[in-house]
Image 1 (tube, rainbow, N blue to C red):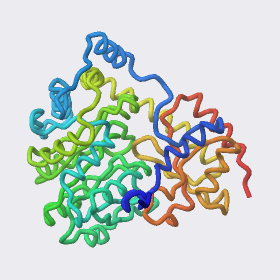
Image 2 (image 1 turned 90 degrees about the vertical axis):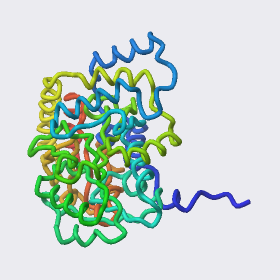
Image 3 (image 1 turned 45 degrees about the vertical axis):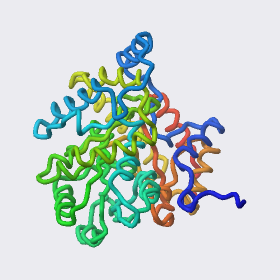
Image 4 (image 1 turned 90 degrees about the horizontal axis):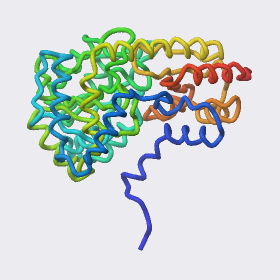
Length: 387
């Protein structure tokens, strides 16, 4: 027999983000590549997980999520957005992180031959997810310097084959926060073309300028939006892999069926602990934002001083930069050189584009780190040798 991988698996590479983080660890560099905190998660959340283990919460939860967690998710949504009612019994599916929620959503509602609209630069999972469904990605550019949408380009991307569009706001890797006007344009096109919107909302509590507007709250969008979120970024537990998808009962049927056969279910004791996190007071989210604003304001001047052209993020915890004033090297070569000397890891910009050439002068830095870590990175970046 011929030993080979599938055509679909051969059409994309391993995660560049995780590769760069791995190289950083091997080299002893400061990793600002993968977006995970190096500070402690909330002690009340960890205590809740310990208590769940002591109480022997060890067996399968309901496949689409333990009932108390689904109720807590629905209650949290309604508390934040009173015009968006969510039925925990029929509309919430708990998954193994937002990553699984996204692929379960696509496999649950998209067929081979359909088209999925993606904004680029994009988080690296979206393209492979669309390919794994057998769909064709159609890319729409976010234009610098403010990562704006050209309405005509977006309209042209919608065709008779369009089944879904993915919106990530606040946006990874740029930090863009989509405006109400942009979301209304997207909503109108979804309604016109009978398409589903899949929204990746995991940074919704980290917004420095503007506001996070759930697409499901816009007229006509509640029944055609799949809203994805997770514990990872808001509660600093990226390794717990507890996420969820909120959708209409009709769309949830497809998501739940796929999820059941992908993973069966997320870890039961961590689901129990997640209920505690979702009941945190509003002051928790205020402090989260305050602390991330401080980290952003710490890393931006360090990058500018080192010679990077910096795009100031309006949300999330990433900075997209341009390296053309520092080197004639491409993004991958320069990123690897930075890991070796002065010892700071970032993600090559080409991994966020369908055409790698579009990102050859860009690097993304992640800043969910302790101030000491960011200061260490700043000292190292100051040693970059300019041409």
